[in-house]
Amino acid sequence: MQENLALSASAAGSDSEWLGQLHALCSHNPMMSYSGERLRGDIAVTSLGGIPLAHVRHNAIAMTRPAPSSHEDRSRYVILAMELAGSSEFCQAGVVARIDPGEAVLLDSSLAFSASFDGNCQQVLAYLPAEELLFDTNTAKLPRLRTHGRAEPIGSMVAPVLMSILRGGGDMTNGETLSARRILIEIARGLVGRQRPVIEDARPVVSDARVRNFIDLHLSDPELTPRRIAAECRISLRRLHRIFAGTSWSVCSWLRHSRLERCRQDLLDPALRHLNLTQIAFRWGFNDAAHFSRSYREAYDETPTDTRRGLLERPTH
Image (cartoon, rainbow, N blue to C red):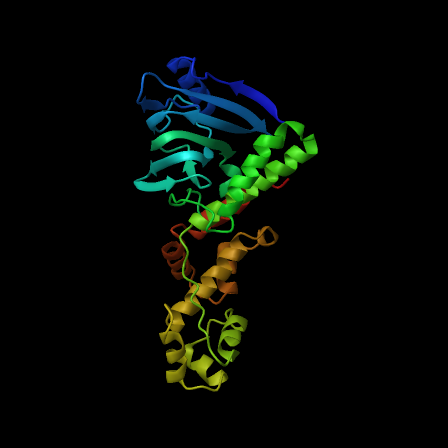
C-alpha cells in the first residue's frame, strides 16, 4: 500500500515550512517568488513503491531550482510534472515547454531548471529513478524538453494514470502498488522515447514491393549497391533513384540508415550480449569498424560503446 510521507503547510503555514517540504522532496534548494500577501500552498506526498508522488498547490509566480552542488545528494531522478490547474512554463537546458491542465513535462534532476506559473496552480510531481528510464534508450541523457499532452497516445495516459494512483492508492494491495508502479515507469519510458530525436523513417512507397523487400533481406551483404538492387528487382537504375526522389533519402543513405538501425537494435538486445561491436557491425553489412563508429555517432549522438553500456547497466532482475 501507499505510505503517506508528508503533508505540509496550508494557507496558515509559514513560507519556510512550505519551502522546507520542497527541499526535502527534491533534495535541492528551490528559490520561489510569489505575489499577494503571503505564500499560499500545500504539499501532500505519498510513495508508490518507493517513488515519491507529490500533489502541490500554490500561488507562486516563479521558481528556480539550481543544479545540485558537489556536497548535495547526487541521486538522479526524472521528474514527471503534470499540470492539474493553472498553467506552467518550464525551462531546462535552454528549452522552454508550457503545460496546461492534463499536460506534462519530464525534467532532469541533475540539471538546473526554472518555472513560471500563471494563476493558482496545482501540479502532480513524480520523482522517477533515472536508471529505470534511460537504460534502454540510445542515450544516457534525458532528451530535449517537450510538452506531452492529449494529442499523443502515450501523453494522454499520464493524467488518468496519475490521478487514479492518487485517488485510489491508499486502497491498493502491495501487489497492486507494484503493478501501478510498473505502469507509471513504462509510461514515462514512452515519454522519454517520444522526446528522442527521430530520424525520419521516410519509407519509399512503391507499387512494386520487391525493392523494399529486397533491401531488407540483403542488408547484411556489404556488396549491396543501387546497381545490384535495380538489377535484381528488374528495374532501371534511373527508376530506382526516382523511387527515392520523393523521400528524404537517397538509395545509399537509406541503406546506411537501415543498417545502423539494425545495429542499434542488436546492441540493445540482451540475447546478443556475446557479440562485440565489430561483429554486430559486420553482421549488417559494414566492412569497416571505424566507418561504422563514425556513422553511428553522427546518427545517434553517441558511440556504439555508449549504447552497449546502457544494455550492460540494465537491471537483470
